[in-house]
Image 1: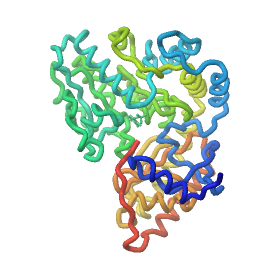
Image 2 (image 1 turned 180 degrees about the horizontal axis):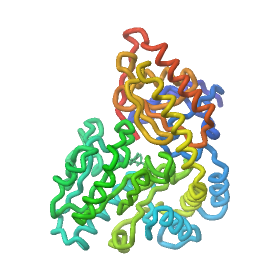
Image 3 (image 1 turned 60 degrees about the vertical axis):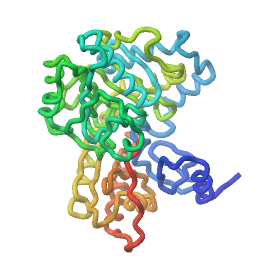
Image 4 (image 1 turned 90 degrees about the vertical axis):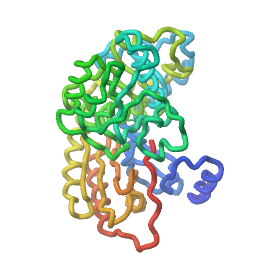
Length: 417
Ligand SMILES: *Cc1c(COP(=O)(O)O)cnc(C)c1O
């Protein structure tokens, strides 16, 4: 049963909702930082499943753990205990310096969990009047796709048409500690933010911002929730992006790479004075914390425990940013990011981010545009220095060969995660 790329794309598009606008590549297999399509062409994966594949495709440590678990037990539901649960929760809590974990599956579910926990904490611990809790969130946030989460998105594509929005959120400008201070009142239970805004274009807040947020939250008895779903677990050169400022939030929200690129694994990690507000029957998930997820997550914790991946992100990230900065003025307007994570603003005169990504694809590099003319680069942390330099060379070549002839411009795609 062999199909060509165009047949498979046509068949995929005919029978699936068009909630994505994928690049026209059909992947069949992958190892490390490289994927191969159905026609045998190879591409360097510079997106890594939006940071879900930090440890590379087919990472042996992760696959071994998954295979071993597949043959023993994969699902119990939380109606029973299983023998992988305790180790995973202890390991993850230790990694975060916290004492409790609430495992879920997708990132959005973990964010929803953090919101529920914060509200419950607000009513039971802080003493907020019933149904009056508010949470301060940021402009240009991305926290997932549930109705509550998109209700406080400022991206019209994410939000419009899906109302009515869940009440209880206050949107302020990202990067301004003062704006947070002004938004907080006696009913504020939490500040929810991404320590680096990924979907918004890898926006790094001003130095000292996270520290100030920490201080403001402590001062006003408000929980600091860090959504580290994309920024966490090695991507920025530290285990967490908050580590760069020595800041410890009250709740870590984790996902993506926690599942090792194999299964969806997410979690909220906090101390028991916070997570302890949830009692039996008040929150849950059929698949959350299942044996396969815990085995895979355990392997991820093992890899992070070596510090090797954080170091790679730090060292290779320095190389990536140095090479990208050298393209400034040669088609690149601005470069942002930290570690092996970069948002590259391309001169709009050269083309849209989509056009640049299509041209990169033709040269064997897979990357993803966001918001018009920004390209995101987030290769697996196992990428070699040579491959990384080659990828930037391909970008330089693309910027030199574009713009494409007028009239061929593709449509800009909304950010998607
Ligand atoms: C991807 C992402 C989410 C949502 O995760 P899903 O697994 O797609 O639900 C939430 N927050 C951030 C910062 C993300 O990058």
